[in-house]
Length: 162
Image (cartoon, rainbow, N blue to C red; front, top):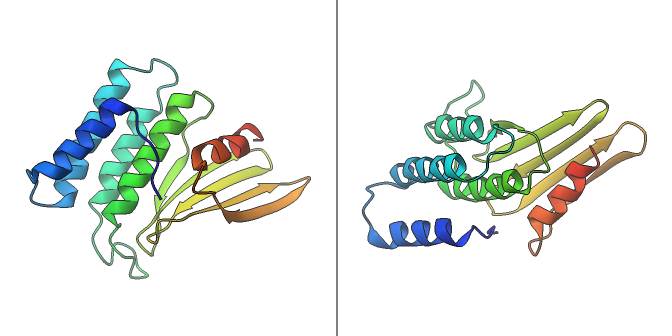
């Protein structure tokens, strides 16, 4: 599962991956966070939640195996990469507030938005899929996987319902 980046970011990521200039994927991801922050600071002047989200990603990628009392796995760097791309697109849409961003025990990342009796969660799994859960106190629960063809648009549809 991939999410399209703006051309300037995609070119940077592809160049850096091909160059082999990083010893580990974690080093690359830290640099990716720096670049995303730079784009955010020089690009979107809307809501200011993106910087805080990037700091949370930085903390999440530093987690090692056993990070919680239940033996949580280190967060998969491919999941972090995909989640960063995804949240960047959500941010650029201007249609969302900052989600709660949490690591999952199995090496994934979860985003969660809550408004009154409504809740929307996305879980980026290590198999590349994105699981969603939407609960509306009046109409019930919807759950499934985001479509690979339009995951950001589908997620924005749920966010607009909050």
